[in-house]
Length: 96
Length: 225
Image (cartoon, rainbow over all chains, first blue to last red; front, side, top):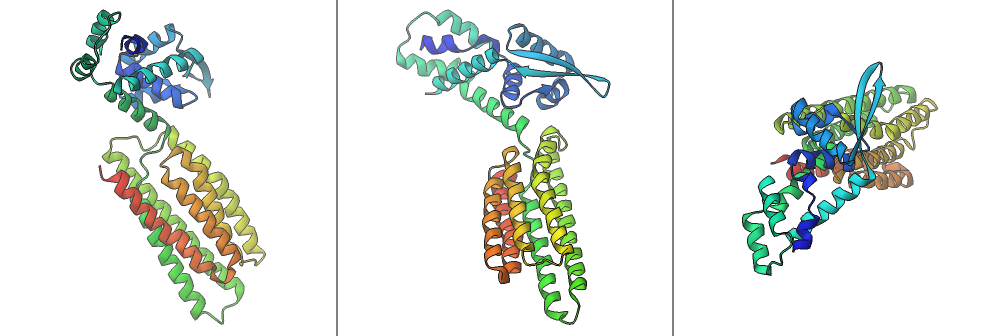
């Protein structure tokens, strides 16, 4: 039991972070507005969670210009993918 | 979830009897099942076009049957018309069927998106349409080239096969039923190529009845929430 709980990742406590990671698990990348629309969030709220995940090294930012407009896209890192998968496994273990 | 993790940290290094595990899940967990459900939903919502309505399929089928009925009737009554004239009339008939099914598809999916408070226009829609249009455009151009050469034998087969390939290709971005509808259309297309004299009937089964059946299944499964 304690093993399973230890495997639950504290970084993914919030629904918003779960949401961001879920989107990036199944999409190669997502931009800020897509994430915002999908989760129906405000700019500030989303930005702070993105920052937190980025600081943990779970996601990375790709800044680029699309027809001269700045565009920020996010991508999951290898570490992020593995950590989220472990979290998912721990969640489903808890159910059984 | 904050509350939960604080408690979990406290008990992290203790051994807990099994019956407490159930208690813990029942009372303190804000349910791992809910989390998993939210994750699954977000994965689907962000990667699949979920606004596709079963009603679109039903209406596409109905217009295809109507179009085929007209074509059948026209071919029976216009025995004295020359081949070029027949091809023109049938081509217009086919284009009208295509435009009205597309209009119905857009309308019903738009309505469904509105009802479920989803964005109809998003990146997934673009991806779906892109993947749909590659085989569809190739097939469309091939059919037009065949018509210009007066080759009408394989029109039913070609439209069915390329449409089926388009559905299979686009199905990874939407409901899994579309994949099986695509396979069905491909098989029917191959049948139409083998039994050429039954082309129109097989075309009607593929574009008409299959659409109605799959549309109905999808309507039952995904639209009535």
